[in-house]
Image (tube, rainbow, N blue to C red):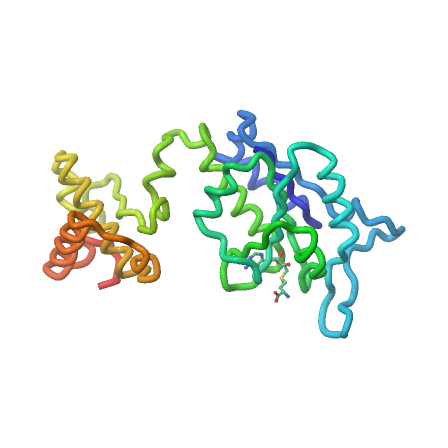
Length: 258
Ligand code: SAM
């Protein structure tokens, strides 16, 4: 998969893209991340990429011409890129979106700066606008890195364990169960006994109950979307009862939810 990043700050991408899974995915040719400096497409002698807002007001707005010239250059190559503008005003970026984009051959991500990008880029030259959340970043670069990361780990061959992406939070609208590793007891806090039982089916049921309970307590919005089967309802009920009986750390991985 090819990612095309349109930014005024290409240097921001150097280190994050070299590390860990993203670095390895590039080395293995599973992704290509091409970072383009929008300034290179400004045609005036000072290579200006922003200007004052029409109608007055604070700050500067990114001009449409350099961004659209860069998009035109990208469009001369096949396959055509799906063009996304990172914006706090876009639709919320969710795991479903990461899955959908992971099936694309080429994704272009436009990173805004300052007061944002001239609205005509959003309206006439982008396929989609996405927001990372209800907060304002200084620029779209960190948001673009999040998108590249979330999409890349879904591509075949990227994660060591192919099933990891499928069992974790949001694969369905359920948060992942609590995870523990050695030591068995840490500063007086033991791991839940069930996980040491060696009974894989019982562990699977316990984890499912914990995942459902977590989702209900922490993310009622996701929980409301779930269609619980009778076995799920039973496991949830058991997890709730266990939570009511003992300290939460035994059932919710140290969470203070209940
Ligand atoms: N004035 C704009 C507004 O109120 O909507 C905010 C502009 S913000 C300072 C500059 C750029 O950062 C945006 O154009 C966008 O590319 C990026 N950005 C900021 N917050 C973001 C978010 N929550 N999700 C995605 N991109 C964001």
